[in-house]
Image (cartoon, rainbow, N blue to C red; front, side, top):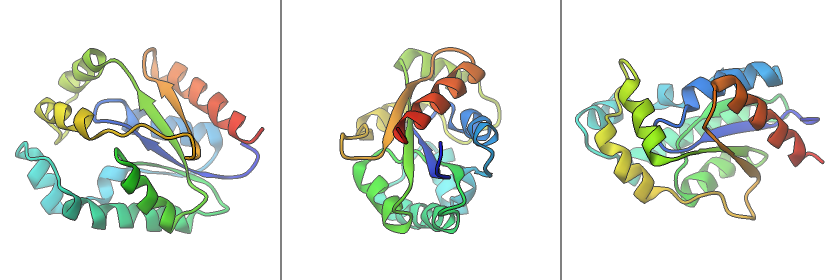
Length: 169
């Protein structure tokens, strides 16, 4: 990308945001921030117990991610955030208007399999249905691209970098 954008890697749990985000940041030569690190302890406890977050839980988390993205404006960066609803992405854009979104998409069975294979993550596979029910894919007027998560992390990252570079053309 010719301009150093802040890229928000989004998608349902298990799409590989935490894997692809750092690889994408390395490929673009910018820092990476793990969105899960912005969650307050109460959110992690709630999700660990298998309880989906509600919007009142998400607002402070989204605001913290947005503030990080705002601080990277003009410098570039990559941050992960499920950003499942348009209103969540609008909230992030309110803090960081130049942010672009990389929506990691994929077959539900593949995503569930990957979630089941993860070790030590607080998000149980039981919450995947609520994630898909909440998901509002990127709309035409939103700056961003969608990339399928089939393949290796390196292949996915390569497709993501190419798709993001096309945004500048």
